[in-house]
Image 1 (cartoon, helix red, strand yellow):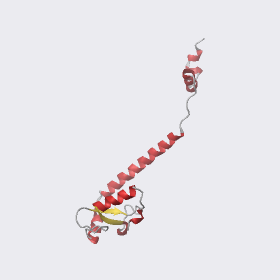
Image 2 (cartoon, one colour):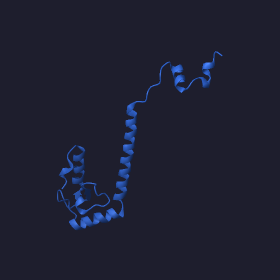
Image 3 (cartoon, one colour):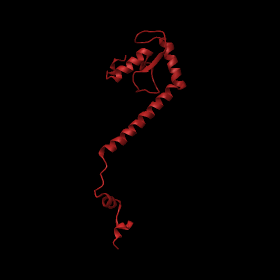
Image 4 (cartoon, helix red, strand yellow):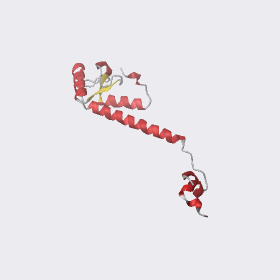
Amino acid sequence: MARDYLKPDSFDKTSAFEFITGRRPRRPKPWRKKKDSLQVHIQVKDARIVEYEDYIRSPEWRMFRHNIIMARGKQCQSCLETKGRIDLHHKHYKNFKCERPEDVILLCEDCHMSLHRSWRNGSSRKGVR
């Protein structure tokens, strides 16, 4: 009889925790919910990156890129360089997968990388013509 308190029916998990440790269980931290929502945000962002990369490898994008290069010439629209690789850069993603010629610009590899570096450092995107 003295050991009735050890029977599973005589207490629930909370009282068992209190009995063993001598203190009340902690409440869940509010920041844990934010962490979960951040994780969801990262997963959505990763899904968008995968979708973008798949589209850039698609025959539709390659044909669009080819047509833009043929129409404008293989020349950077920023520094007017004609040698090396030419990238087709999105000014915005409002018409993603349904781009119009005015939605993109041709940039050499150096201008394209410097443009992205300046955006990462906090510059405005309004400088893209």
